[in-house]
Image (cartoon, rainbow, N blue to C red; front, side):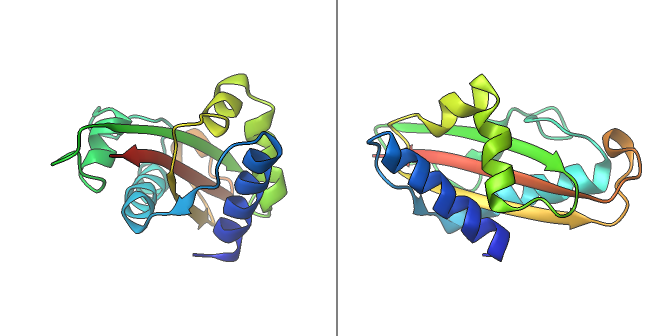
Amino acid sequence: MSSLERGVLTNINNFRHDHRLGSLRFSSKLAAAACEHSAEMAQRGYFSHDSANGKSFDKRISRYYSISGKRYWSVGENLLWSSPDVDALGALNMWLNSPEHRKILLTARWREIGLSAVHVASASGAYGGREVTIVTADFGVRR
């Protein structure tokens, strides 16, 4: 994990603790899904929960975080893009200022998280050629 990713995880867990929710464990499988998505958005110049081929985020995540053999499976996702020098607290604050993203952070059922922060010197498309950092946080639970 990068220092930004570690900081975001720490801040999310502190926020959840403040709201009497359990801490999230790092999942390498969710991180792989998040990494693929951040990289794809950066390379193709789009910003969406859906993949470039139109598949929904849950279908993308399920390729890494398998449903197989589980009675219960659920995933969620938060995204952001910002100036290249966004820090962990700034990332958390962006999500907290959005009711939909805040709700995902406060979802009690999550047990695991994967994070990916990608820095791009000149991102095309939705990013207007700017230097940006794209962060994907994938949340999950399997039982």
